[in-house]
Image (tube, rainbow, N blue to C red; front, top):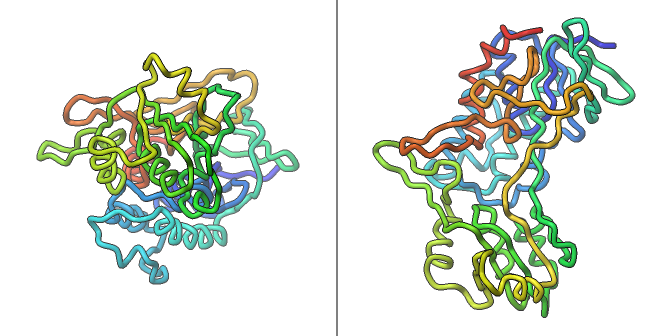
Length: 345
């Protein structure tokens, strides 16, 4: 078995940040194992690249410039350098430089293409099982991402959320004479509704539980910085949801007396009701495992970062949320990585 000081599981933005910050803290690249099935910027690079961000360009730039090991000053002239810093952009515009950084790191750390099937702590080291290969690592960072949540309506054919959020792919599909249900009232919901309205679907029924929430910049700070609508999705929602509904769009609370009848009229469904962390590949001795959502600690030498293990925060108005976003991951990592380097088995 090969031995490493650190193993980072996941090559999305959070995993990339973890590798970079470890190098910034003096960990030698050759002592870092980096594990991922594809090394294609995780779900952001493969599923969400056509999604309009709710993050300002300047925060993406801060993410790229905050880590010395990224060496972003040497990067090609990517499109994101030319955007208005206060504006939003497609996620592909941040994925492009992240792909470049991934290639640079793949030449310095030790990449392993595959999936982790189990983790096991033995003799003060974590055994990382990749199936055909096993690694020994003093410390492990889990940046494994999350999966979309769903509901159990088996009579409806599901349109995967990654398809519903891709305007180009949706316009290639025919939904003629079909009624599509969309569950949710999130940022993703607003984008899915817009994309469906560009198709030939007969009706689009949006089922929701709560009124829309909007992020708001105030002197005290931001209201609903993670759960509120921002950017292009917020602009559209104010006009088309809290304003005048477009033709073919109908909205119903899930407690509406006609819910069952309305749902029975649908042929297809899109679930935009949030995400749940992927199951960590831990040995059976840990059937349930919680993480410290203020420090990212799962166990001695085992840490979590990213959308699967976000930081709990309280906004200036007392609302408890979990921080999700590239700059938020980097900022969180800056505050905890020194602790991680001391909290070993």
